[in-house]
Length: 314
Image 1 (cartoon, rainbow, N blue to C red):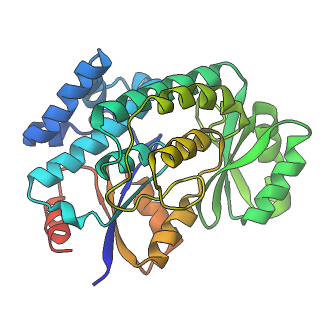
Image 2: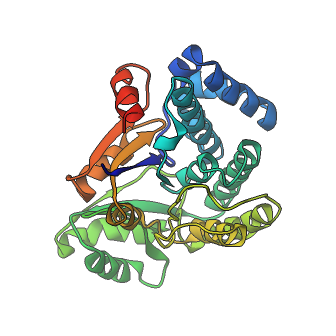
């Protein structure tokens, strides 16, 4: 029998109503939301459950909201009888890496939440400070995307930001450079779609955020994860506290190597992946990375009973 990895979503997975059903049916999930409200000093749970969507979509709100909801869903699963031993490894897309590190015992809930909230705040500030954006490039390999960036940049910043799966790479940079990327994509045999984001995440535009986040990381307690956790920046496994801090700081300005991270886990014997938290983005990406492995999603109570049972026996 193979091994199971739990994967956690990143920014963009939010939607009003997320987590409400788990909170209503699980005291442990409700405790997570109550603790988050107290730690942050505002009703994050209300925004998760009721919106409005526009406020929930703000970078400084959605990051803690997705983190808290993912943790609440995980706690609800454990309360339902899922053995912690099912967690063979963990990974998370961008923001989701913090969730992975938390469930793997590398950082406490309060410390992780404060970090995520600070991260969202700093990335929002960096986005407001510069006219920048992101574009999804579909149907091109890495070499072609790098050529596209070089042509469209014209002296401005435009870099690969998310290697999500084969044929889907997100680029990040100045607004004008992103607009040029949309115009020239067909020359490289691909298509490009502009993304509705606050700014150029995982690019040099985020350096001010990374520098300040480094200060917060430096004062946060970390320990070695009890199960393997893959880092976004290099698809390597996290180690001691020093390297965790370093790689999380790098992550803000570096490309997210998501496809590489999943391929690393598959190569190491993980053949069942469970997306825990709001949305279904990662499950969709898994099908494009490798259809031979199992990928399931747990984002709502409805229809999740069978997944809980399957996980318990994994």
